[in-house]
Amino acid sequence: MWAERRPGVPLELHTVTAAEAADLVRAGTVDAAVARLPIDRTGLHAIPLYTETTVVVVPKEHVVTAADEVTVADLTDEIVLRTGDDTLDWPDGPPGRAAEYAPPTTAEAVEIVAAGVGVLLVPQSLARLHHRRDLTYRPLVDAPGSGVALTWPDAENSDLMEEFIGIVRGRSAHSTRTRRSEPPAAPAPRPPSTAGRRRPARRRR
Image (cartoon, rainbow, N blue to C red; front, top):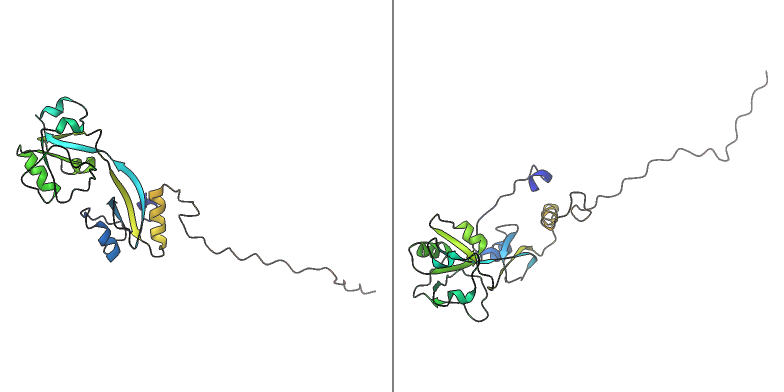
């Protein structure tokens, strides 16, 4: 949609971690970020986009794959990896038994699961991002979801940023909020009035 409305302005995408997204926006390294909530909103605008389903990543032969959905209680006896970049908020603590080693990243944790050690709880998009042919996942129906938001600096928006926000919000190209209003056109000049003018007298022959 951006390419259709702004064909002369490329939209460059950069992969960043959840922990650094907000700081990169504040530093001006990127113009905006799709970030996982919660974030420190100091100096930032943020609009919630959606809440993502949490899934459990397991080897394809794991017992939980027999069901279409999994509950937290189903993982009581499982070794559950805790990653350093985990953004899920567990009010009563993560389920299962904690592994002795806490991998710093989701990517490393996926490798450990593939080696047959433990399971991993992540938002569904991360399970898709780190997909492997020897792994699969199932929705964890009673787990907390992961909120996702668009964030950008709280300074005055440029025309391009207004356009981008409008696209994210689903505004049409003709929305008055998508584009900044243009100054009204000057009224067309009116023909001179003939009221009160005397016609010249006709000359006698």
